[in-house]
Image 1 (spheres, one colour):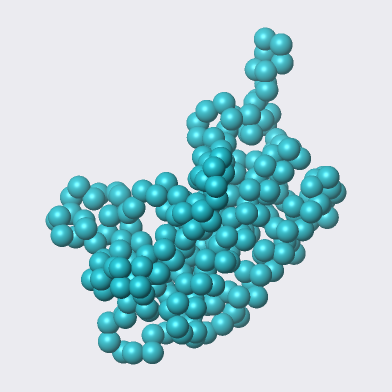
Image 2 (image 1 turned 90 degrees about the vertical axis):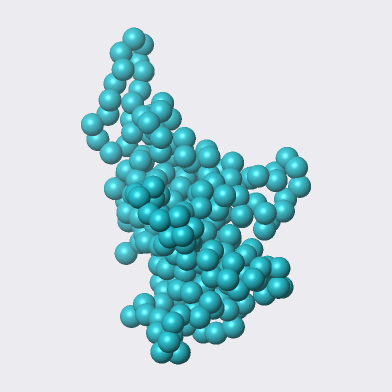
Length: 243
């Protein structure tokens, strides 16, 4: 089951947004690949590394889509905003991969440079990085998330004043995930006169659904577009299938 009948009734004024979310979830389920086995028995090729990264991103995007559904069904505003923002970051990852893959195919990025980048995107970490040898840091250090998200705007290349629309949307969603007034309001904090009231019950409002799901729809659409092009440029079809 996707969205519950209760949730659809509760947020009926945003029926179209909810239907688009469900359509995206069906698309993830139809295309989800459970396994990938390289054709060669030796070390992973550069193309194989790119495929593994894109398939891993697809699996993450699918899980985050389901997290959005469960958050709406459970009326959980913090969970919905966190999942939506995280999806933006996964879409940014695939967008960044696509930009660099295009440059690699065009000869603007050497095989070694692209391979190192793939390692960083696959293994990217920050915790304990200062304890590693410098050569290893160059292989595993995570790229700034904002840099990944900005890759979407680089691909869409919208004119001003919309040039940074995707990153700005990510920042807006982040306001509901930080320990500030926006996140506390999403969790139900309300000022009534001189009294601050903290709602003990799940309290996702229709307006919050509109903000999160509406922004999420954009991220789902961009993700599928970039994932498809990465798959095409890798010039092979992953083995396995949904099951």
